[in-house]
Length: 253
Ligand SMILES: NC(=O)c1ccc[n+]([C@@H]2O[C@H](COP(=O)([O-])OP(=O)(O)OC[C@H]3O[C@@H](n4cnc5c(N)ncnc54)[C@H](OP(=O)(O)O)[C@@H]3O)[C@@H](O)[C@H]2O)c1
Image (tube, rainbow, N blue to C red; front, side, top):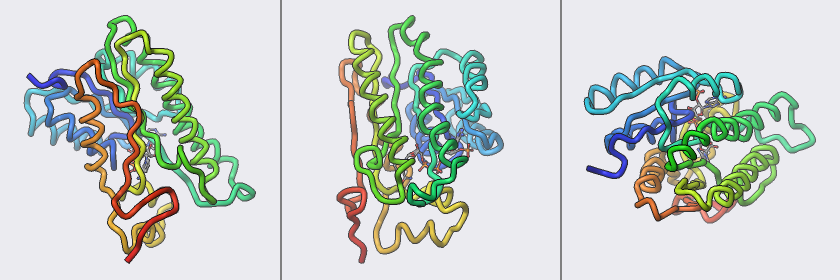
């Protein structure tokens, strides 16, 4: 029996990109899935597909907007105890310099990337502590380690994720609960399309002349992280495409 077989894995933002790919990778390992996002129909399609392919696992699909704390609390109360929480839901809006940042977009990024992650973590931790088991895997970013022009608020949210991940690791050091941060560079998902507010050409341009990571590359590392023996905690993983060296240095041909 594999280490992840029968574990209950809760993924936020499982309707697309890294979250969706992570669901597929955990399903291969025989984990039960709690898939959450705002686009319920996508989650239901994924549930059907995975339950058909892996009849031994249970997949729960639940609509959840991580900006809504009351929804977080009621969803967590309604699902089985969580063994692995993947705090993946996240987004960026725009490349505006700080002077032009829209207040509503500022709030959306903070509420999704920071408050959502915090409230989800608060909701699952008491049960993890009671059961003396659990793993919290947070999606950070190179943007949480190196700021760049046009990224002030997104970078601030990912710096916050970095700090929260480290603080939690300190707070839980005397428990068996593990806390990990996975920090990708450029990954070709819907992320850039959201950033450029639906402008596909601008989004595609981010990856011109270089080979970005794909969602599955990161999903495999998330599942690898979760699958280590209980005494091993991958604290922090920074992952670039080969053609990227830091937040702004990308080789294009
Ligand atoms: N792509 C990259 O280059 C990159 C690099 C570094 C880090 N990351 C991080 O990786 C994570 C996943 O990003 P991705 O690349 O997979 O982007 P994506 O393809 O745009 O997927 C984002 C996911 O987050 C969900 N989401 C957004 N707002 C939400 C909300 N309010 N409530 C619940 N779910 C919400 C979306 O689902 P719904 O719209 O259905 O709610 C979607 O499933 C993010 O935290 C991102 O910051 C991405």
